[in-house]
Image: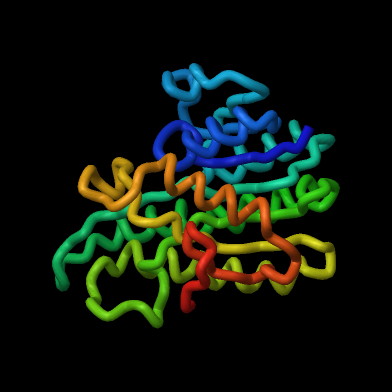
Amino acid sequence: MPSLLITGANRGIGLEFVRSFAADGWEVHACCRHPEKAKALKTIEGAVTRHKLDVTDGLQVASLAREMADTPLDILINNAGLGGQREAFCETDYDDWLEVFKVNSLAPMRMVERFVEHVAKSERKLIVNISSRMGSIASNERGGSYIYRSSKAALNMITKGLSNELAPRGITVISFHPGWVQTDMGGEGAEISTADSVAGMRRVIDGLTPDDNGSFLNYDGSPLPW
């Protein structure tokens, strides 16, 4: 049975990933800060194991990695994320900026460092970082959203670096833009549903090869500029 671990699994895109993979017979390790309160996550049938995990807590991440030491992970999906406050220029909340960086940038790196051996012993050997088109420097034509944009730009750099670092081990690392999705972060007026976003990313994931290592992709598989 193929297996994966995903962070931020209690809502939005993460929850839909759990639902989709579980329905296809995968062993899913679903991580969130308060699994006991994750009512929707509890209703998903299949081989789903819920783990209590705050991705900003290094001790928790290390403990879970030790607990799962004998578990190969075909896919590691770093999905947990924060949007940050959208404050006007000259009104930046720097404490908020640091908190967003902890979740969106530092935590994915921490997860990879702790779970790389789990991925290396699997068949698929895939690491997926859920980024955003707003992290594309080349596509930034409006300014604003400095906190969120910079955290995702940093994640993209981490993706690119890891793709080079881990390629000799046969591990493929990519960044995804999931689309403008109807989630708590994206809002009700967003363009696509979580089901459409995840279905698109699943199709891309199923077709990934080592040649795609280090890519920044839209949810439909089209390449995006860094």
